[in-house]
Length: 141
Image (cartoon, rainbow, N blue to C red):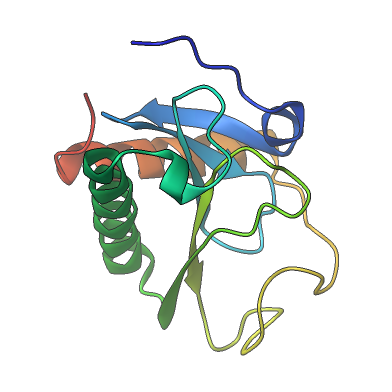
């Protein structure tokens, strides 16, 4: 596999969960939402179109399958899958389970309130849950 360098902001704002065929899955440190971040493990990928067609399909498959598993586990009302990249240029895809009673509903999570930190125990529990969901969905390599 080619070398891969994670953007320092993604490193700071999330924790490693599991590696998939294409993406590294990370957990956002914002405890308000079940929030995974998928980063294609390729150098110099800024936009989705920087990936080849097969890798674009893999990115979407990994995000949608993980999102479906997260929705089933957490019982969300809506799944948000989005790329923004206005602060972090490195291509990454947010997979966020949303609830009608969450802090930002019905708007986007960005710019709404302040992030809430996990306790160490809750962070490890959520990280392990998402890793297990990825494995059960057949996504882990």
